[in-house]
Amino acid sequence: MDSLHFVTGLGTGLVSGALIGVERQWRQRMAGLRTNTLVATGSALFVLLSSSFGSGDPSRVAAQVVSGIGFLGAGVIMRDGLTVTGINTAATLWCSAAVGSLAGAGLTAYALAGAAAIVAVNTALRGLARRLDRQPGSGDEVPTPYTVEAVVAAGDEAHVRTLLVQCLAGSDSRLHAVASTGDRADGQVRIHAEITSDGADSTPVETAVARISMEPSVASAAWRRTAA
Image 1 (cartoon, rainbow, N blue to C red):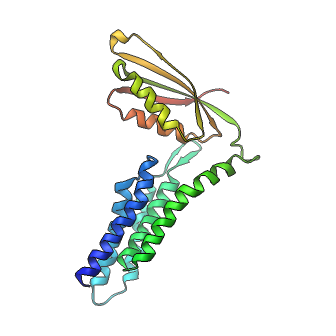
Image 2: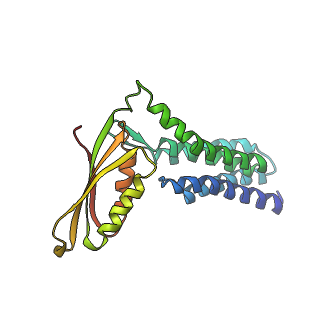
Image 3: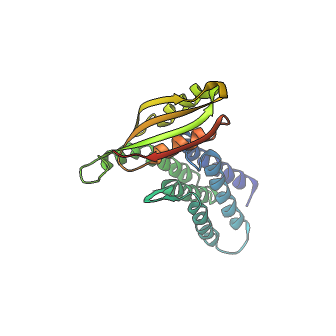
């Protein structure tokens, strides 16, 4: 294996993983830009390593990459009651490994095409999947109410409320009311938000609560499903 082959394979794996990761990071998924880039780059390096040996079958190393990514994907799948989240993220990581393996094998055009196809699936088919979920008989056409409560520093109240609205924008969840209670003289206020989502998928609400929980000014944040 010459230096040009190594640089081309490594660069293609890195760029392809970054293309996939940008879309994931933009949607604030658990596995974002860095994770997908590292998965594709690492897969490319493993395949490049296998091709550097004079003898042996490179496909055996690629097969082990697929098995290894399975453990990484299992780490991002979470279950909360009857709701399972992270499956699409795990599948994207698996596909990133495939793109990286193509790059390591020297199939530059195929690797870039694969990355473009993965991004297209995660973007173009997103709206179609939501429309199909709302078809009669799926059960997702029934509105489900949620309540979100957060205790924040009084000085950052407006910022957290704006962040909550931004996190729910573009999803099937609608914010109906937001109220703040508490004595601002004590330095903390309680934000109470009422949200309605189409169907039983609580992912948008969970994502919004997880996002505002990352703010240093948020002392606590929680959500619950309320009675219709």
